[in-house]
Length: 301
Length: 288
Image 1 (spheres, rainbow over the protein chains, first blue to last red):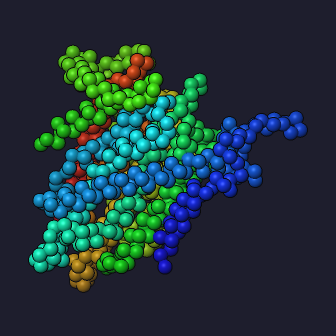
Image 2: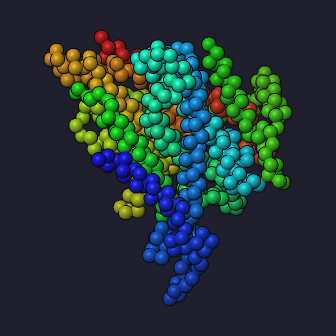
């Protein structure tokens, strides 16, 4: 029984269900805000800490954090999924073709491709430069801004997926069974489809899950720099950045200053975000464990 | 040797994005102002000779890039060198230890922390210090720099070492375990060689090439981390310098951002060279 895989799937499916159906069972609506009230001559002002009425507390405008998390989860979950899917689909097609028809074997060390050097400028900085001019108080709607960000993230992620897939394909291409398939007259396309792809299935799955984790990390790093999924609303006086979509990393980014007081405003989105990443990580670990116990050699030490 | 000019060119191009891609303020449609991009590059190249490219505005005051950058460079250099060298060396040895250790739970905890993005680790560290202070009344570390005279040191140092070394540990442990499954290890064991001898003189030399090949990835983590923690801890390094002055009151400062990114790449190559030297040293020690 692969407990790691099971736990990861349970967490992910739970989050998915919460995002799809959560709003029907949530105690408060997204547009419903708790007002200032007084009891016994004492003013009660939001943000309210987690309580029976507000399980995750409210933000300083009195909005229920649970409602915000549920509203934002659509963006967090489905954008990360779609970007990862698009990266995998395009990147692995390119990688497969390059690896199969390319000339040399996978290089180890020696020759370094140019995008490796670009590691010096991390991806989120490049995204920051592309998005900063258009992401603050944007006129396009939140879904449009989300789409733009998704396209940018997809394009920037393709080289690394293609590179990994190319290396893996180049290794499989040299295997005996490919040679024997070719010797009995199989064409390149059927070898790619029936042999190479079948062997890549598992690394494909693992890479897909890891890409989701990577993309969620990118969302967060961008949010720290005030680029939120779906655009940033900027208020002046005092300067405040607010997520338009309530996407989770956006909620973390906008409540960064709550480190010292009303910590649940920062901590609840952060906890949801961490648990979500954890779910995918457990799936990836579980898959790796599954394939290792099925195929790999064992340690001799 | 097209790598260096290609690299410089890609910086020139990436930095163009805010100048070229702009949203219309009225209807919000996106426009590509290619002419803006071309004139930005032309101005930059011409300005190199006149010195114009090395002036920038901070707010409304004009500064010379060369006079300002030194202090910022020193801060970033300090953290990347410490993070790089300690992260690499410590990560390597801990990776070996984790590969042979029987305490599997330690590795599992390590793997769990490794998936958390850098900013989460920084936020959690800050949160921990604040929580500790609120319970005991003792502030162990400063959570962020209040001013240049009073910088936060301990937490940034912890983060700069923790995050890259975590990656190194996992990577080395994984490659070690792969090496342990190879036939030459079985053979070495059959010859009756000691366990630590096999680990350090058979397995580790075969893991070093992987570390070398992965060095750019390691550097990527180190530098990505630098951007995040300089920002979150309010440290006056090169990356915070670039972020906070990229836009002045009149708009985007292309030449300033390009200069900042060039400075970072110079830093990147210096640290990379240092780490290669460190690995070379380790090779001399463990490969006979």
